[in-house]
Image (cartoon, rainbow, N blue to C red; front, top):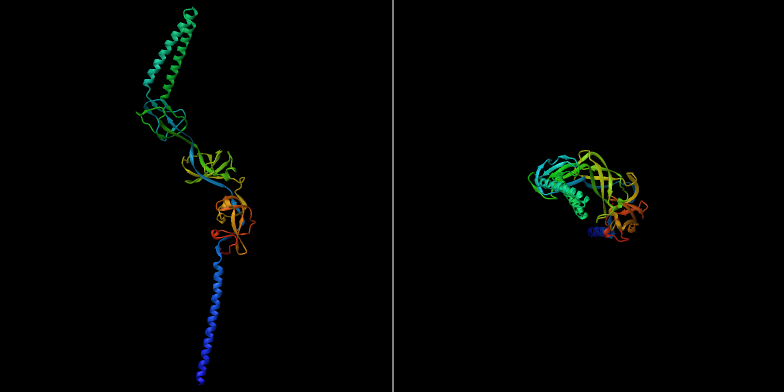
Length: 353
């Protein structure tokens, strides 16, 4: 009987302990569930602290070199090419004869024009003498003088044709392409040679509308050529387009003196000093990714009492992935940089980093 009582007491204690343990676990589980529920209500975000920093204000633009001068030298008359005096790569001077076109037929025309002029001179002299004695009328004399002038003009025209049988270089430079061989028959306007002058080159780039007002013609620009990293080059702005293209970029040309290694078509980067020559400027910035609806909207979320608060800031210039803040932030605010698509004004947040 006594032994049975002991068993009953032990069993009761064990049951009590088990019940306590179950109740305690249940309480912990309820606490954990509540905590998880709180976290589920929050949106995970990343943040940065708005702060002032030194920003490189130099503006860079990429482009390719083009010759300062280039031309396609063409034939002025029809005929068969007799001689070609240059080859691709030849250096030529302005006015130099590059090729000649057969001139036999033209020389016959010149001879005929010379004979006609000689006859016109003789006839006119006879009319001049006859007019003094009343042998011809004033009208007959005037006709004779007109025929003399026409004969002189005809001879000059034939002389021009003779000169046109020599194809001459219009500019000094290098023969980049030779498109004719002796024996070829050409017509007026047929391109025979391409000549380029690369003693100086033009770097053609596009400058954004936000920067074009900060540069000017005559300004010196540093040039970096991708394939010539050791070369230290500079150029001078010679042209800024008065009108932008469809993308609101302005064509700009920079003249660069060729030290011998540059070629037309090479890729290069121009670096413009846009902050009165200073390379850096201290300014308040935030990442471009912080803007909820693009930089132009000025809308960002900041952290306030564990919630997201939307504000609108006034932006300045964009420097890479950094955006200058003119007003709306003082510095020190926590600015949300991710998760904005899930946020509303007042949304509860959980800062991941």
